[in-house]
Amino acid sequence: MKDMITIGRDYRCDVRIDQSWDTVSNEHAEIKNQGGTLVFYDHSSNGTLINGQKVHNRNVEIYP
Image 1 (cartoon, rainbow, N blue to C red):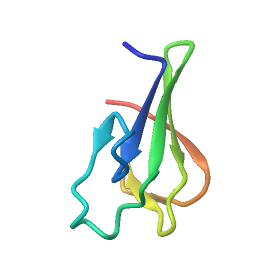
Image 2: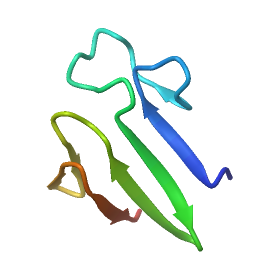
Image 3: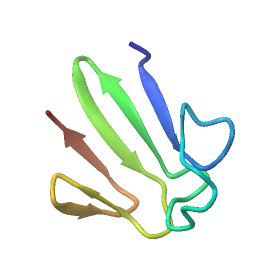
């Protein structure tokens, strides 16, 4: 597994979201593996729901 996965509408992202999803930023977020812990880094304009919690311009641990 890579140590970082990028998510967004930009063609350079690892997980690319269709351009028609205008609520997703071009460089929306990253998921990083930090010593076995997955951390979601939000870089979006509007935020993201993670584990039922709104995350906006901050980091949060994610889990299965």
